[in-house]
Length: 108
Image (cartoon, rainbow, N blue to C red; front, side, top):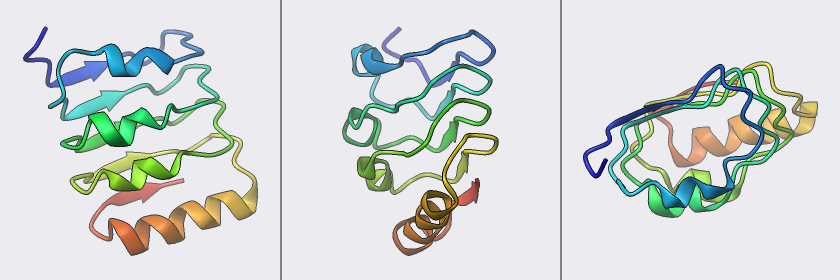
């Protein structure tokens, strides 16, 4: 499992990804957690998966995201659609992505 490049855990009724740091590979290019019940992203995602390119968290129960996610400078695509972000949080997320990772395609 040390060569894991693409992790697809979509459509699994997952509520908690707190143990994400336990994934042995640190060069995961794609993480797909879409269509689950996740309401919290652990801040470790920004520290451990610095080579992450694609992050799919759409259709979950997120109301915010950790600031460490903006450390992921290689991100090309982040999908956060259909999460219950308050309007001001969605705007803040867009603004922060535009200023820190401007080449990332973000959908909120």
